[in-house]
Amino acid sequence: CSVLGIETSCDETGVAIYQGGRGIVAERLHTQAAMHARYGGVVPELASRDHIRRLLPLVREILDHAGLMQPDAVAYTAGPGLIGALHVGASVGRSLAFGWGVPTVGVHHLEGHLLAPMLEPEPPDFPFIALLVSGGHTLLVDVADVGRYALLGESLDDAAGEAFDKTAKLLGLPYPGGAALAALAQQGDGQRFRFPRPMTDRPGLDFSFSGLKTFAMNTLREAGEADIGADVARAFEDAVVDTLLIKCRRALAQTGRRRLVVAGGVSANRRLREGLAAMVDDQGGSVFFPRPEYCTDNGAMIAYAGWRRLVAGQSDDLEIRAMPRWPLASLVG
Ligand code: ATP
Ligand code: MG
Ligand code: FE
Image 1 (cartoon, protein in one colour):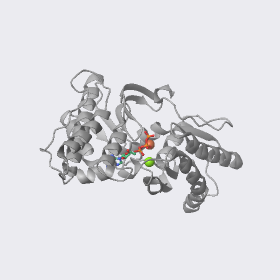
Image 2 (cartoon, helix red, strand yellow):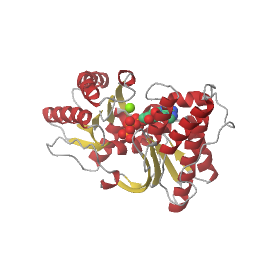
Image 3 (tube, protein in one colour):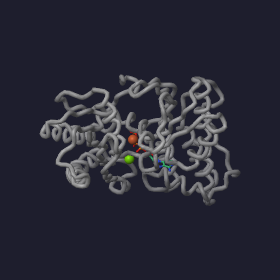
Image 4 (cartoon, rainbow, N blue to C red):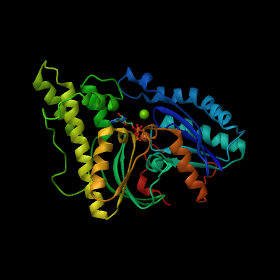
């Protein structure tokens, strides 16, 4: 069974074909980052229009590459995300499936992120704790199985990726600055500044990252002209990594789970990966990450999540589904 996956929830047009028993057999990704960079963030209308331009040619390319006339099913991101951007993938995906006479399934974008580590050679078994750290979300989830998600904690304000991007902007780095901030932090002195570890001094698994950006702003202001960008980047990254690590350790202890899955754009962060790997190892558990290309948005994770849903017997009617807000915990298995 081959499933075409379509991702257009934000600013990447991602397509891929997942084949049961074989894995991902074709994929393409077009990122609009450069187009939005001059505005300092994603411009929704520009995003939708660019998805319209890119999507069908990319679908044609991967079908050719896979040597298929048509897939056996179509999976598209149905939410959450930008409404206009979602509508492009949803309308194109549903219509192609209608024309081909194959089933469709609307996939939850965060379920896509969360299951992405299953595309790796040594996938995790259920159950596990998932830390989802992306541009729009920071969630700790207890995952019993596909579709059985219990929310343990979330950010009360900025998402981890959003905090990276806003702090990167303060440092004069182009949008989206998460990876660039991490690169700058490598040259920083980790002893120079110490940023707070928000909400770690009280029980619970919620997060708050907006204060770190303010802390970075004040630190930069107090330094005046002095060139401390790399040191601030390093102190910020250390604080985010440490905070995520403390909450993950707490989530594992609280639930008694032994496996930790980390996904979403920020899970590409090298220091986070190293820190979490060491912590989980220390606890006698195991940690799972997607490969770096599957941490940020892509079509492969949508094709895979769609395939899991389809083999479980689920598919949609003729409706075109696009839901800008859609709680992960509302899904069913
Ligand atoms: P969501 O999935 O919540 O809807 P999104 O799809 O925009 O949001 P992703 O594509 O999963 O988010 O991730 C993008 C985020 O990951 C950006 O905030 C980006 O700065 C961040 N990011 C990417 N690489 C790194 C890195 N190496 N270190 C820190 N942050 C990173
Ligand atoms: Mg993006
Ligand atoms: Fe995403």
